[in-house]
Amino acid sequence: AQSVTQPDIHITVSEGASLELRCNYSYGATPYLFWYVQSPGQGLQLLLKYFSGDTLVQGIKGFEAEFKRSQSSFNLRKPSVHWSDAAEYFCAVGAGEYGNKLVFGAGTILRVKS
Amino acid sequence: NAGVTQTPKFRVLKTGQSMTLLCAQDMNHEYMYWYRQDPGMGLRLIHYSVGEGTTAKGEVPDGYNVSRLKKQNFLLGLESAAPSQTSVYFCASSWAGLTGELFFGEGSRLTVL
Image (cartoon, rainbow over all chains, first blue to last red; front, top):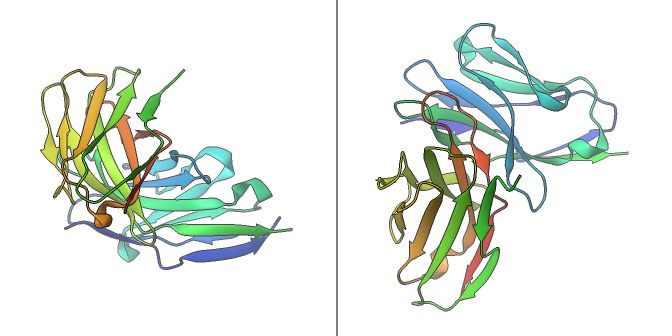
């Protein structure tokens, strides 16, 4: 069965510092991978996705993620964090025939200190 | 644009009571989903639908029923609520096929006493 592990429950970074959120997945076939962000009291919003091709994908709000098949990882990065990036971040793998059934990780809560 | 709308946003139930959560989307999406979100567990799929008149079980379907009588609506029912169903419920919708992007509602917080 598909699974997603986000090893860090909480991460605190200073504003302007770089960020990397870790994600490891388990999936037998070629994975469809996603990062979503959830602001407090809101639904989830797609940051970026990987289906195939270039293993470095760019998303919204200055985020990028790199797919590494050998490490079964899809880590999210941002070179300079802004206070508005404080939120919960979810990594997900697409399961099912069309990859639409998402299996989510437990999430990482990002705190930004000024 | 309304997108995905969930009602109600908050509800408190007593054990054994029933209720229905309504999800409505105005994007003409084929696929719709119900997830529950619990601390430290991410989102787990309850039921989903790949088109009007169809439903299927997800990862945690027990204690829930769903219906998709109209393409734009997806109802989630709890026939006899239990404290274990205290959670935040999210509805989402997407285009059919390989797109990956789910559009989420703002969530419905349910407390079962």
